[in-house]
Image (cartoon, rainbow, N blue to C red; front, side):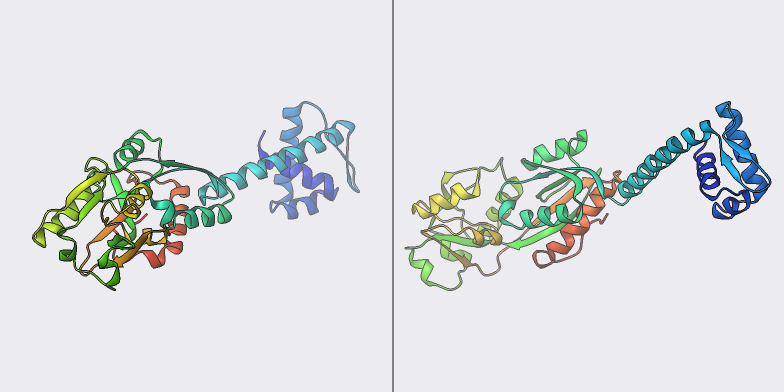
Length: 303
């Protein structure tokens, strides 16, 4: 039994005429007649009474009509759900992100995505870059948001955030009176920073920047979370070099100053090159639109 047989039967039941029903379903009358005959043979009982004037349903036909309408409605729902899934409008998205992106526009991206795609379930997981890469390989993550570099050729990526570093200083620090700093201004200052194993690319980029200015930062305290590091700055333990969007963290006792020739930190969306999931494409489209003011430069690979 095929859905077209059910559609032909419903059209005939509602039109009560083979000619009009055939026009309604865009087939010739003989094809419609054959379709109804095949349906009756499969069901095993007569469904219609044929007269010279009109078509009437048998008692079995009336019962079958209700079931046929219900089946077609469910089939239409299934078809529409498949089409919506192909457009990325239904499904599930598991998204990994590095600590700190909650201050960098990620909530805006997720909120907008959920507004535009309310039937997609979003699962957020705060993970290190290494954990995200493992999750992508295993299929447990659909997209990872992390710092460069991305070395696995199985991954495609696109920069969503490209942000320069700024200096976070204790509010009472003499350098806080300057509108802009040079990195050399910090040469004799104690630093608070991430352990290298937590943010290797970030750590190395800062070390290279300082080395080019002729000094190695004296790190006096380490912490793995940016809010903790900013709290250490507020406690006057040292200075810190966060990504610019952390200026949105207003913490008493901390001031932010731009630094001349500060390096750019790329935070990228990463996904499997082999993945053609429409939900991933939909999320990337929303992220690009929301973060247009946070991103510069060309993408390595776009989905």
